[in-house]
Length: 336
Ligand SMILES: Nc1nc2c(ncn2[C@@H]2O[C@H](COP(=O)(O)OP(=O)(O)OP(=O)(O)O)[C@@H](O)[C@H]2O)c(=O)[nH]1
Ligand SMILES: [Mg+2]
Image 1 (cartoon, protein in one colour):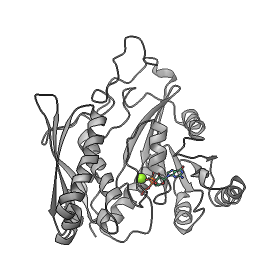
Image 2 (tube, protein in one colour):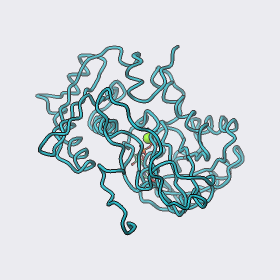
Image 3 (tube, protein in one colour):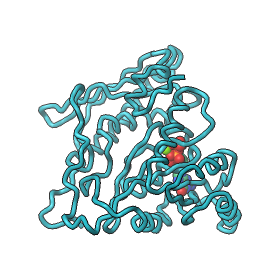
Image 4 (tube, helix red, strand yellow):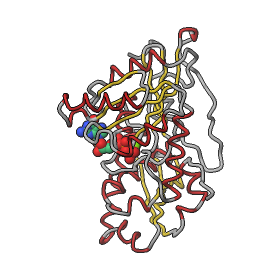
Protein backbone atom coordinates (compact mmCIF):
# COMPACT_ATOMS: atom_id res chain seq x y z
CA UNK A 1 0.00 0.00 0.00
CA UNK A 2 1.39 3.46 -0.80
CA UNK A 3 2.41 5.41 2.29
CA UNK A 4 0.41 8.53 3.14
CA UNK A 5 2.15 11.57 1.76
CA UNK A 6 4.44 9.59 -0.50
CA UNK A 7 4.62 10.49 -4.16
CA UNK A 8 2.44 8.34 -6.39
CA UNK A 9 4.64 5.84 -8.21
CA UNK A 10 4.59 6.60 -11.89
CA UNK A 11 6.57 4.58 -14.37
CA UNK A 12 8.24 7.65 -15.74
CA UNK A 13 8.90 8.97 -12.26
CA UNK A 14 11.27 7.12 -9.97
CA UNK A 15 10.42 3.49 -10.81
CA UNK A 16 12.59 3.70 -13.91
CA UNK A 17 15.80 5.48 -14.47
CA UNK A 18 15.14 8.54 -16.59
CA UNK A 19 16.17 8.52 -20.24
CA UNK A 20 19.37 10.42 -20.84
CA UNK A 21 19.95 12.35 -24.02
CA UNK A 22 23.04 11.41 -26.01
CA UNK A 23 26.11 13.01 -24.55
CA UNK A 24 24.58 13.64 -21.14
CA UNK A 25 25.66 11.67 -18.08
CA UNK A 26 23.32 9.47 -16.14
CA UNK A 27 23.14 10.10 -12.42
CA UNK A 28 23.96 6.71 -10.99
CA UNK A 29 24.41 7.87 -7.44
CA UNK A 30 22.24 6.76 -4.56
CA UNK A 31 19.22 8.96 -3.97
CA UNK A 32 16.34 9.05 -1.48
CA UNK A 33 16.67 5.60 0.02
CA UNK A 34 13.40 4.86 1.71
CA UNK A 35 12.58 4.70 5.41
CA UNK A 36 14.66 6.82 7.75
CA UNK A 37 15.21 3.98 10.19
CA UNK A 38 18.12 2.60 8.23
CA UNK A 39 19.34 0.61 11.26
CA UNK A 40 16.90 -2.19 10.59
CA UNK A 41 17.37 -2.19 6.83
CA UNK A 42 18.86 -5.04 4.86
CA UNK A 43 20.06 -4.84 1.30
CA UNK A 44 21.86 -7.18 -1.04
CA UNK A 45 22.62 -8.37 -4.52
CA UNK A 46 21.21 -11.72 -5.56
CA UNK A 47 22.71 -13.11 -8.77
CA UNK A 48 20.43 -15.39 -10.76
CA UNK A 49 22.62 -17.71 -12.80
CA UNK A 50 22.20 -20.90 -14.81
CA UNK A 51 22.25 -22.46 -18.25
CA UNK A 52 20.46 -20.63 -21.10
CA UNK A 53 16.67 -20.79 -21.18
CA UNK A 54 16.13 -22.20 -17.66
CA UNK A 55 13.86 -19.25 -16.75
CA UNK A 56 16.23 -16.80 -15.04
CA UNK A 57 14.66 -13.69 -16.52
CA UNK A 58 11.13 -14.98 -15.92
CA UNK A 59 12.08 -15.49 -12.27
CA UNK A 60 13.56 -12.01 -11.93
CA UNK A 61 10.37 -10.49 -13.35
CA UNK A 62 8.30 -12.60 -10.96
CA UNK A 63 10.39 -11.47 -7.98
CA UNK A 64 10.14 -7.81 -8.99
CA UNK A 65 6.46 -8.10 -9.88
CA UNK A 66 7.00 -6.24 -13.16
CA UNK A 67 8.71 -6.91 -16.46
CA UNK A 68 12.22 -5.52 -16.16
CA UNK A 69 14.03 -8.05 -18.36
CA UNK A 70 13.02 -9.72 -21.60
CA UNK A 71 11.90 -13.34 -21.95
CA UNK A 72 11.62 -15.54 -25.04
CA UNK A 73 11.45 -19.27 -25.73
CA UNK A 74 14.87 -19.05 -27.42
CA UNK A 75 18.24 -19.68 -25.75
CA UNK A 76 20.66 -16.79 -25.17
CA UNK A 77 18.00 -14.13 -24.92
CA UNK A 78 19.64 -12.13 -22.12
CA UNK A 79 22.97 -10.66 -23.21
CA UNK A 80 24.07 -8.46 -20.34
CA UNK A 81 23.38 -7.85 -16.66
CA UNK A 82 19.93 -6.50 -15.90
CA UNK A 83 19.11 -5.48 -12.35
CA UNK A 84 15.57 -5.72 -11.03
CA UNK A 85 14.81 -4.31 -7.59
CA UNK A 86 12.20 -5.47 -5.06
CA UNK A 87 11.34 -4.77 -1.45
CA UNK A 88 10.49 -7.57 0.94
CA UNK A 89 9.91 -6.65 4.60
CA UNK A 90 12.81 -4.40 5.58
CA UNK A 91 15.04 -5.74 2.80
CA UNK A 92 15.82 -4.29 -0.60
CA UNK A 93 16.67 -7.14 -2.94
CA UNK A 94 18.63 -6.33 -6.06
CA UNK A 95 18.19 -9.24 -8.45
CA UNK A 96 20.96 -9.55 -10.99
CA UNK A 97 19.68 -11.26 -14.13
CA UNK A 98 22.56 -12.72 -16.11
CA UNK A 99 23.03 -14.28 -19.55
CA UNK A 100 22.86 -18.08 -19.62
CA UNK A 101 26.22 -19.76 -19.08
CA UNK A 102 27.30 -22.15 -21.85
CA UNK A 103 30.44 -23.13 -23.74
CA UNK A 104 31.10 -19.91 -25.69
CA UNK A 105 32.40 -19.78 -29.23
CA UNK A 106 31.90 -16.34 -30.72
CA UNK A 107 33.28 -13.17 -29.19
CA UNK A 108 29.79 -12.06 -28.16
CA UNK A 109 29.20 -15.43 -26.44
CA UNK A 110 32.43 -15.02 -24.50
CA UNK A 111 31.46 -11.53 -23.37
CA UNK A 112 28.04 -12.79 -22.23
CA UNK A 113 29.43 -15.71 -20.24
CA UNK A 114 32.13 -13.49 -18.69
CA UNK A 115 29.57 -10.92 -17.52
CA UNK A 116 27.38 -13.69 -16.08
CA UNK A 117 30.27 -14.95 -13.93
CA UNK A 118 31.21 -11.44 -12.88
CA UNK A 119 27.61 -10.94 -11.73
CA UNK A 120 27.91 -14.08 -9.64
CA UNK A 121 31.26 -13.04 -8.15
CA UNK A 122 29.93 -9.62 -7.13
CA UNK A 123 26.77 -10.90 -5.44
CA UNK A 124 25.91 -11.47 -1.79
CA UNK A 125 23.87 -14.54 -2.69
CA UNK A 126 24.10 -16.66 -5.83
CA UNK A 127 21.04 -18.61 -6.95
CA UNK A 128 21.64 -21.43 -9.41
CA UNK A 129 18.53 -22.01 -11.49
CA UNK A 130 17.98 -25.48 -12.88
CA UNK A 131 15.26 -26.42 -15.34
CA UNK A 132 13.24 -29.24 -13.73
CA UNK A 133 12.68 -30.91 -17.07
CA UNK A 134 16.26 -30.70 -18.32
CA UNK A 135 17.68 -31.71 -14.97
CA UNK A 136 21.42 -31.82 -14.32
CA UNK A 137 22.60 -31.74 -17.92
CA UNK A 138 26.19 -31.09 -18.98
CA UNK A 139 25.76 -27.30 -19.07
CA UNK A 140 24.38 -27.15 -15.53
CA UNK A 141 26.99 -29.60 -14.21
CA UNK A 142 29.77 -27.44 -15.65
CA UNK A 143 28.32 -24.37 -13.90
CA UNK A 144 28.01 -26.32 -10.64
CA UNK A 145 31.68 -27.31 -10.81
CA UNK A 146 32.75 -23.65 -11.11
CA UNK A 147 30.48 -22.50 -8.29
CA UNK A 148 32.98 -23.82 -5.76
CA UNK A 149 35.20 -20.80 -6.58
CA UNK A 150 32.52 -18.42 -5.32
CA UNK A 151 32.56 -17.82 -1.56
CA UNK A 152 29.05 -16.24 -1.38
CA UNK A 153 26.06 -18.20 -0.09
CA UNK A 154 24.64 -20.38 -2.85
CA UNK A 155 21.13 -21.66 -3.20
CA UNK A 156 19.47 -24.01 -5.64
CA UNK A 157 16.22 -23.08 -7.35
CA UNK A 158 14.58 -25.77 -9.43
CA UNK A 159 12.32 -23.95 -11.90
CA UNK A 160 9.52 -25.06 -14.25
CA UNK A 161 8.22 -27.58 -11.73
CA UNK A 162 4.87 -27.26 -13.49
CA UNK A 163 6.33 -29.38 -16.30
CA UNK A 164 7.24 -32.47 -14.28
CA UNK A 165 5.87 -34.82 -11.64
CA UNK A 166 7.15 -33.93 -8.16
CA UNK A 167 8.73 -37.33 -7.30
CA UNK A 168 11.09 -37.05 -10.27
CA UNK A 169 12.62 -33.94 -8.68
CA UNK A 170 14.02 -35.72 -5.67
CA UNK A 171 16.88 -37.28 -7.65
CA UNK A 172 17.72 -33.92 -9.21
CA UNK A 173 17.81 -32.13 -5.87
CA UNK A 174 19.88 -34.86 -4.24
CA UNK A 175 22.34 -34.97 -7.14
CA UNK A 176 22.81 -31.19 -7.13
CA UNK A 177 23.31 -31.04 -3.36
CA UNK A 178 25.94 -33.77 -3.52
CA UNK A 179 27.99 -31.62 -5.90
CA UNK A 180 27.57 -28.13 -4.51
CA UNK A 181 27.06 -26.93 -0.94
CA UNK A 182 23.73 -25.12 -1.21
CA UNK A 183 22.37 -23.12 1.74
CA UNK A 184 18.81 -23.95 0.70
CA UNK A 185 16.82 -25.59 -2.07
CA UNK A 186 13.56 -24.31 -3.54
CA UNK A 187 11.18 -25.54 -6.19
CA UNK A 188 9.26 -22.94 -8.13
CA UNK A 189 7.36 -22.19 -11.26
CA UNK A 190 8.54 -18.71 -12.21
CA UNK A 191 5.87 -18.64 -14.89
CA UNK A 192 2.90 -19.31 -12.62
CA UNK A 193 4.50 -17.70 -9.56
CA UNK A 194 4.25 -20.88 -7.49
CA UNK A 195 6.83 -20.89 -4.71
CA UNK A 196 8.27 -17.49 -5.67
CA UNK A 197 7.09 -15.66 -2.53
CA UNK A 198 8.81 -18.20 -0.31
CA UNK A 199 12.18 -17.75 -2.05
CA UNK A 200 11.81 -13.99 -1.84
CA UNK A 201 11.24 -14.20 1.91
CA UNK A 202 14.35 -16.35 2.25
CA UNK A 203 16.43 -13.79 0.34
CA UNK A 204 15.05 -10.98 2.52
CA UNK A 205 16.13 -12.81 5.64
CA UNK A 206 19.62 -13.60 4.31
CA UNK A 207 20.90 -10.45 2.57
CA UNK A 208 23.30 -8.39 4.72
CA UNK A 209 22.16 -5.63 7.06
CA UNK A 210 22.71 -2.21 5.57
CA UNK A 211 20.99 0.76 3.98
CA UNK A 212 19.06 0.45 0.75
CA UNK A 213 20.93 1.34 -2.44
CA UNK A 214 17.95 2.62 -4.43
CA UNK A 215 14.81 4.68 -3.77
CA UNK A 216 12.12 2.39 -2.43
CA UNK A 217 9.85 2.50 -5.47
CA UNK A 218 12.58 1.97 -8.09
CA UNK A 219 12.36 -1.40 -9.84
CA UNK A 220 15.20 -1.18 -12.37
CA UNK A 221 18.44 0.72 -12.80
CA UNK A 222 18.42 0.46 -16.58
CA UNK A 223 17.87 3.64 -18.59
CA UNK A 224 14.52 3.54 -20.42
CA UNK A 225 16.29 3.83 -23.77
CA UNK A 226 18.18 0.61 -23.03
CA UNK A 227 15.02 -1.15 -21.95
CA UNK A 228 13.26 0.05 -25.11
CA UNK A 229 16.04 -1.49 -27.22
CA UNK A 230 15.67 -4.75 -25.30
CA UNK A 231 11.93 -4.78 -25.96
CA UNK A 232 12.52 -4.48 -29.70
CA UNK A 233 15.13 -7.24 -29.48
CA UNK A 234 12.57 -9.42 -27.73
CA UNK A 235 10.11 -8.92 -30.59
CA UNK A 236 12.87 -9.88 -33.06
CA UNK A 237 13.52 -13.08 -31.08
CA UNK A 238 9.81 -13.86 -31.09
CA UNK A 239 9.20 -13.09 -34.79
CA UNK A 240 12.38 -14.16 -36.56
CA UNK A 241 14.09 -17.50 -36.40
CA UNK A 242 17.25 -19.53 -36.94
CA UNK A 243 20.38 -17.40 -37.08
CA UNK A 244 18.80 -13.99 -37.36
CA UNK A 245 18.13 -13.17 -33.70
CA UNK A 246 21.73 -14.11 -32.88
CA UNK A 247 23.15 -12.05 -35.74
CA UNK A 248 21.37 -8.86 -34.74
CA UNK A 249 21.53 -6.21 -32.07
CA UNK A 250 19.33 -3.19 -31.34
CA UNK A 251 20.30 0.30 -30.19
CA UNK A 252 18.21 3.33 -29.33
CA UNK A 253 19.64 6.35 -31.18
CA UNK A 254 17.04 9.01 -30.47
CA UNK A 255 14.65 9.48 -27.55
CA UNK A 256 12.84 12.76 -27.91
CA UNK A 257 9.97 13.98 -25.76
CA UNK A 258 7.66 15.97 -28.03
CA UNK A 259 5.55 18.96 -27.04
CA UNK A 260 2.31 17.00 -27.37
CA UNK A 261 3.47 14.61 -24.63
CA UNK A 262 4.41 11.80 -26.99
CA UNK A 263 7.91 10.37 -27.44
CA UNK A 264 9.79 9.88 -30.69
CA UNK A 265 12.12 6.90 -30.54
CA UNK A 266 14.53 5.90 -33.29
CA UNK A 267 16.31 2.57 -33.13
CA UNK A 268 18.83 0.81 -35.32
CA UNK A 269 18.79 -2.94 -35.81
CA UNK A 270 22.26 -4.07 -36.87
CA UNK A 271 22.55 -7.28 -38.90
CA UNK A 272 25.61 -8.83 -40.52
CA UNK A 273 24.51 -9.35 -44.13
CA UNK A 274 22.24 -7.98 -46.79
CA UNK A 275 20.37 -11.33 -46.84
CA UNK A 276 19.64 -10.89 -43.11
CA UNK A 277 18.44 -7.34 -43.71
CA UNK A 278 15.96 -8.69 -46.23
CA UNK A 279 14.68 -11.27 -43.74
CA UNK A 280 14.39 -8.63 -41.00
CA UNK A 281 12.37 -6.40 -43.31
CA UNK A 282 10.23 -9.26 -44.64
CA UNK A 283 8.19 -9.32 -47.81
CA UNK A 284 6.99 -5.79 -48.49
CA UNK A 285 8.33 -4.73 -45.08
CA UNK A 286 5.82 -6.97 -43.29
CA UNK A 287 8.22 -8.44 -40.69
CA UNK A 288 9.68 -5.15 -39.50
CA UNK A 289 6.21 -3.65 -39.44
CA UNK A 290 4.95 -6.31 -37.02
CA UNK A 291 8.11 -6.11 -34.88
CA UNK A 292 7.78 -2.32 -34.76
CA UNK A 293 4.08 -2.40 -33.91
CA UNK A 294 4.60 -4.88 -31.07
CA UNK A 295 7.59 -3.04 -29.65
CA UNK A 296 5.84 0.34 -29.91
CA UNK A 297 2.82 -0.95 -28.03
CA UNK A 298 4.89 -2.36 -25.20
CA UNK A 299 7.17 0.68 -24.87
CA UNK A 300 4.13 2.98 -24.84
CA UNK A 301 2.48 1.01 -22.08
CA UNK A 302 5.73 0.95 -20.12
CA UNK A 303 6.26 4.71 -20.20
CA UNK A 304 2.53 5.53 -20.25
CA UNK A 305 2.96 7.92 -23.16
CA UNK A 306 2.19 7.68 -26.87
CA UNK A 307 5.25 6.48 -28.76
CA UNK A 308 6.35 7.00 -32.37
CA UNK A 309 8.86 4.24 -33.02
CA UNK A 310 11.12 4.30 -36.08
CA UNK A 311 13.21 1.21 -36.81
CA UNK A 312 16.14 1.22 -39.23
CA UNK A 313 17.80 -2.03 -40.29
CA UNK A 314 21.49 -1.58 -41.13
CA UNK A 315 24.05 -4.04 -42.42
CA UNK A 316 27.23 -3.83 -40.35
CA UNK A 317 29.19 -6.94 -41.22
CA UNK A 318 31.41 -6.90 -38.17
CA UNK A 319 29.18 -5.37 -35.51
CA UNK A 320 29.95 -8.38 -33.30
CA UNK A 321 33.63 -7.42 -33.41
CA UNK A 322 33.08 -3.72 -32.75
CA UNK A 323 33.84 -2.51 -29.19
CA UNK A 324 31.23 0.26 -29.53
CA UNK A 325 28.41 -2.28 -29.79
CA UNK A 326 29.61 -4.00 -26.60
CA UNK A 327 29.78 -0.70 -24.76
CA UNK A 328 26.20 0.00 -25.78
CA UNK A 329 25.13 -3.41 -24.44
CA UNK A 330 27.02 -2.93 -21.17
CA UNK A 331 29.51 -5.71 -21.95
CA UNK A 332 33.30 -5.82 -21.70
CA UNK A 333 34.84 -6.27 -25.14
CA UNK A 334 36.91 -9.49 -25.15
CA UNK A 335 40.22 -8.51 -26.75
CA UNK A 336 41.16 -11.94 -28.09
N1 LIG B 1 6.54 -24.08 -18.16
C1 LIG B 1 7.33 -23.12 -17.68
N2 LIG B 1 8.02 -22.34 -18.53
C2 LIG B 1 8.82 -21.38 -18.01
C3 LIG B 1 8.95 -21.17 -16.63
N3 LIG B 1 9.83 -20.17 -16.42
C4 LIG B 1 10.22 -19.76 -17.65
N4 LIG B 1 9.61 -20.48 -18.61
C5 LIG B 1 9.78 -20.35 -20.06
O1 LIG B 1 11.10 -20.70 -20.42
C6 LIG B 1 11.55 -19.92 -21.53
C7 LIG B 1 12.85 -19.21 -21.20
O2 LIG B 1 12.61 -18.26 -20.18
P1 LIG B 1 13.64 -17.09 -19.87
O3 LIG B 1 13.19 -16.44 -18.61
O4 LIG B 1 13.85 -16.23 -21.07
O5 LIG B 1 14.96 -17.95 -19.60
P2 LIG B 1 16.44 -17.43 -19.31
O6 LIG B 1 17.06 -18.41 -18.38
O7 LIG B 1 16.42 -16.02 -18.88
O8 LIG B 1 17.09 -17.57 -20.75
P3 LIG B 1 18.45 -16.84 -21.34
O9 LIG B 1 18.33 -15.38 -21.09
O10 LIG B 1 18.39 -17.17 -22.78
O11 LIG B 1 19.59 -17.48 -20.64
C8 LIG B 1 10.41 -18.95 -21.85
O12 LIG B 1 9.64 -19.50 -22.88
C9 LIG B 1 9.62 -18.92 -20.55
O13 LIG B 1 8.25 -18.60 -20.74
C10 LIG B 1 8.19 -22.01 -15.73
O14 LIG B 1 8.22 -21.91 -14.51
N5 LIG B 1 7.41 -22.96 -16.33
MG1 LIG C 1 17.28 -14.35 -19.70
